[in-house]
Length: 261
Image (cartoon, rainbow, N blue to C red):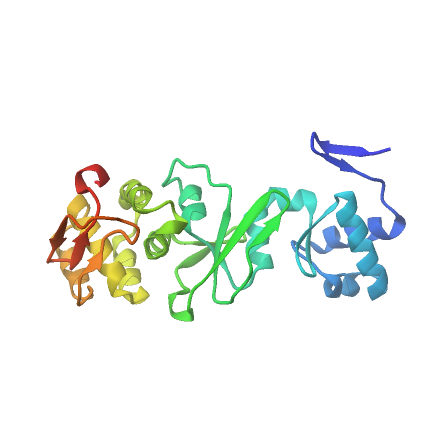
């Protein structure tokens, strides 16, 4: 006999140890767990825990996230973002995933994108792809805890995404997100975060875009102007023919601005 959770998942009956582990994890309120955590909350031996976890994964009750890191399946699918930032520490959600969460893009993003100060391999957990980018500690800031989910603040996700535009669909998609988001941003925080991020190429690009789009005032732009690149930089790292130059922001314009903006 099998118990059906949904049309794609079937559960096999539980042994005594398997039921004990699941009940112990739920009672302890653990989002993620491994052998050490189960040793603490159960009376099972380490070998028995290893075998029990393997069986629970095989039967579909538990999801293996990475080595010695697991989650109860129904909890994982109900709280995926929260569990992934708990499983990959330190980390926060950013790029296209966060832009979608905040409603700044119409794209339905399936990949979970995390930023960490440590190097991790990308993960595949059931049908979820998890991309993990590495930032230096000086750029790892500007995130908030929303009911246990660690995610970039609205201002910071726009900075992260401009820094690695391929993580948000490229320059055209970024411009759409910037326009959609701007009225909802804390402008003082945005200015502080842009400067704190300490990347002159990024300052030149975002200053140019804000200026061309007419989204902010001259005071804001003049403050950014102090931190721009000393030499000309490409507007779009993946653009092609250079169509012009903007001396104010030190930008080589290699995209059709009329189509872009």
